[in-house]
Image (cartoon, rainbow, N blue to C red; front, top):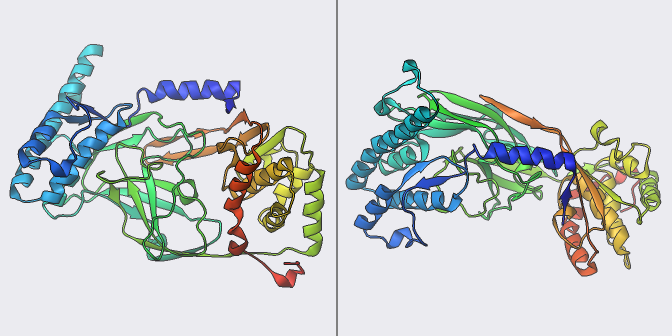
Length: 445
């Protein structure tokens, strides 16, 4: 069981306190028991359930929010003039309910300045409800994910790297209504968790997502404000923070956004109402590295110098100055990490050795994770002995601000279970096909 360092624990405690003011999705009203699947409800029952709940932003009760949006999705599926009229009537009701909550909150603290008061009829609409209405009307979604022009169409990268996407949320509502946009509240893990990359291979199969990232702690300070028609909210997304490295091939990518729920780590999005980008074609080419016989021998020699009885030190992030205190660059481990991707084929070969002792395998798995940023061995019990893990610094900034962290140190490990460890090591088997060694460099395959 991993135990955080005292300094890291204090930071996480502060995160949880701030997250109490954050949002994940909550429904006010009588959401009771496991509800009937929305498609089995009569029209009357479906109306009653939607009238009984009023969405709001709060920390917790994710499933209640999902239930509400499943109802909206069923309304969209049924469609028609009657449901369009119903959702149109829900918009002012939702605005009034939100205005009443805000008024009560102001009165509980201090009198609001007259200039701050706004008519609920002129307020921004909740994105999910307005999106459902537009879909029933067979009109465009009010909120669109727009990608920088240079990254639209077909783009290419080399394994295991993935692109960085400058994106914008743009209000393109057909009736020019403002939408209520959330800014922040999802960045404490080191990625913006209300975003998601939906990646499909050539057969339409969904590729895995990174369900956990960084500390896995969600939340953060957030604000809500109207995004007027034509307005945009800009940020940048590291694709590698959301999906593991993709095997060489061609993929279709859509960037998704949910204004309330953190969808980055959720596999099942059925029933949720989210915004998305147009499809992007991504072509991933195999990596090519130069690896001389001399370099191969050097890496193997350095690997043999790492003490498999010492405390294992794991660098989670691109090795650099920030990690030198824990892993000095002149150390055997530091020199391997400084070699970068060319060291990976050597370590993959070493990982296949017969009768490899579990402590040696643990060292190789930790080095591969540090070099490639994939297959984190600290997330599964029985793979590593005692370790110290250092996470790299991060910074996230959007149109309205953002946050940054200085990484952190954690400790963990357990008694190695050889079978669990061998099974975990199998995750690296395909990588021999993903990285090509330049034969002209004098490397031995």
